[in-house]
Image (cartoon, rainbow, N blue to C red):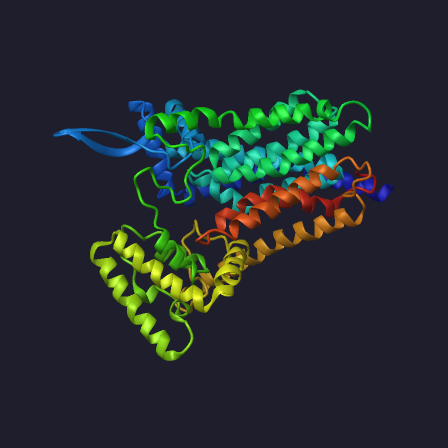
Length: 483
């Protein structure tokens, strides 16, 4: 007992204030030295600016008559993040992205506290403090505070939903204020990114089970779960105005953003995307090929050898020739016309016939693994192919160290989950946090299944795992009487 008290005293001495201060300094450093405003950030910013100045949710301009232009409405992005940017622009000045980054830094620190609070309630004070330090000093999530993108706020909504779940359960798993905290977190999370519906798909059933189990066989089952059903309805209600707006503006039923970020009337690049999925794995291909389509040149030397492999050397050479001819025609106009799309689709069909297992299983798994384990240096001045001898040795060493740190976080989470399970705290036998544990595991599984369907590998798509991973890691530092 004395040893445990001494250990708790040590952790208390380096308490939450120090962790949050260190986390703040880290995020301010990223904002000072590695702030990034490009690509999707500018799209979100343009939507927010036009919304404020013209009252139109859109970007760019369209000609409505000779010499007269207007903002072009869009539905390619959900309104959650433009609402955030619009609020920042209103308060701090138009297009003041740096102010938005400072707000994101504060939100990210709140995420750290929420994750540590969840771990602390499950595993004890010591575990909560360790998780707070792990979260505050995590460079992978801190880095995204320095970019006007949805990731930081999405992480906050995930952590808030988990924390709200814990507090709702502690308060009796009925109608209480924490139920509406969960509803708000789930609702805003979906407004930020359409794939965050998976968070609701994991949390709501777990809450239903918890409410049903909590009745102890007494009373109406429907009455017991009615609070959760009401919460779920409130979580999806914010999509109603957005869906109505899309119907009135575009005459389409679109409650979420389309997969290929195309407005009505714009043909999605399905042929190119299908061909790309027949060979793509690493993030370098995303950066050099996938993002450049329909606007930039695609060089055949940027494609890996596997993009031309269909069997024999003769067949490979013939496929390379047809691919080179197609890319030459595309590069002449850098536009994915219907004819170009059809030719990409034909190449894809040929490759899928030869390697169906690779297309449907091998490559999706490889892309998902790449998203999980590659160095998370995409926001830094480090080449995509960081392992190349042409890259300075210092950058190669740094990237390798970053990859090792990322693997360390993954390892802590995996070992922590199984340690939690081994101690019997995941069984459905009256253990308080079993529902929460399976909600977190379910979210990871559902999101992994989604990642297997994506065209391109982007490490930021796996950042959403971190709030869950941090809580799982806390199990390794649980007090003996926790749970």
